[in-house]
Image 1: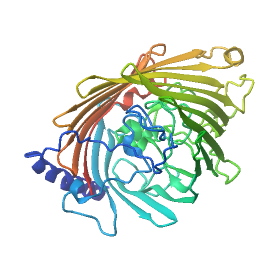
Image 2: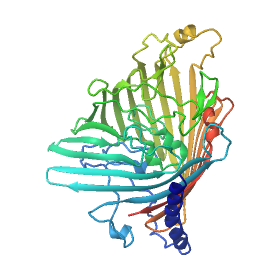
Image 3: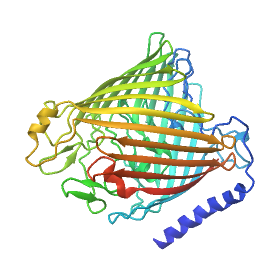
Image 4: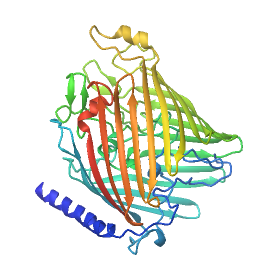
Length: 487
C-alpha cells in the first residue's frame, strides 16, 4: 500500500509542479473564449430541434449548466491552436488529471480522504463514409479504493470504459447509435425527472468533475428527424443501475440500524441483470413550437436505485414506468424551463406496500438569466408528490415515521466569469424547506494555459436530521483540489 501511495503522490507532483511554474505568467486567452466547451449536436439538421444556455434553431435540447463537459457527441477540440506542442500518437486526445480531497467533518465509518486519484482519459474518433466510431476510456489509480479490480458496470477499478460506440446513417433522416454511450435529456439543472439514464452519485459527491455525474449506458439509440417532430428511442437490453450510495465511499442513514452507517454496513442489493429480460425502453418526441422547445417522454424499466426491500430486509430494484413532458424557451430576457413526470411504481400499484417506494409525481419550474456582466443566476422550484399517500400511511407499522406527502426542493445557481473568462466561480445550492436540509456545491476553476486547468471546490451537506435525503450525508462534507492537463 505504501508503494501505491508513493506512485500516486509522485504522479500527482509531476502534474502539479509544472502547473505552478506556468501559473507565474499565465498567457491570457482571447476575449470571449469560454472555459467550457459548448455542446454540439452530432447531427446538423434544420429540422433537428440541453439546458439553460441559449436557444438555437431546432436542435437537440441542451445539457444542464455544469454538465457541458459530459456531452458525448462532441469530440474535444484537439487542434494545435487549442493545445501546446505536445500531442498523443495514433490520433488520440484526452487529458491527465490529479485530484485530492478530504472530509472536513469527522466520520468514524469512512476514511479521511474523500478522493485521491490520478486519471488519464484517452479518446479516439474515427469517421468513415458509412459510419463513425468513438472510444473513450479512463485509466485510474484510486488511492482511496480498496479494490482495483475492474467492474465496468459499477465503474470501479483501474479502468472505466466511458464510450465505445458506432453511429450509422442508413437513410438521411435516421441515425442509429449502438454501444456504450452517455445519454441525457430533459431540462432540469442537476435535477433529472424524465432522464432515466444512469447517474454516478458517488463521483458527484466526492468532488470528481461534473461530467462523471452521468454514467454510461449500454444501449441502442434510434434518432429520426422530420418536419413534424423528431423522435428518439433508446433500448437498453440489460438494466443499467445508478452508481448509488452503498456505504463504500460515502456514509448514509441506515433505517434498520437507526443510525449513520458506512463501511460497517455496505448495501448489497439484488440487481436485475438478465439480458433482454431485465431491459429498459425510453422514448422522446420533441419539436420547436415558436420559440419554445417542447418534448414528450416515456420510460418502461426499473427504479435506478434499490427502492424496494424484501420481508427479510434485502434491497432490490422494483419495476417502474414514467411518462412526462418538458418546455424550454425565452421569457423576459432569460430562459424559462418546466418539466413534469409521473412515476408509476409497477410492483406496488395500490401504494399500500411500505417496503416498496410509492408512485409519485414530480414537477419542476426554472428560470435563468444574466443579472450582471458575466454573472448568471438560475433558480428552480421542484415538488415531489406521493401518489397513494393515504394507502401508504395506513400500511405503515405502528410507531413508524410517516413521510411528508409533498417534498419541496429549491435550487439556486450563480456563475461568474472573470479575468478574460479564464476564472470561473460557481455555486449551486439544493435546499428543502420542509425537510430542512440541503447541499452546497462550490467550484473555482482557472485556466493556467490552453492546456492546464486548476480547480478547487467543496461539497457541503447540512440538515436538521440524520434521516433526510441531504442530512444523512453531512459527515461526507469535503473540500478538494484538482489539476487537469488536456492533450
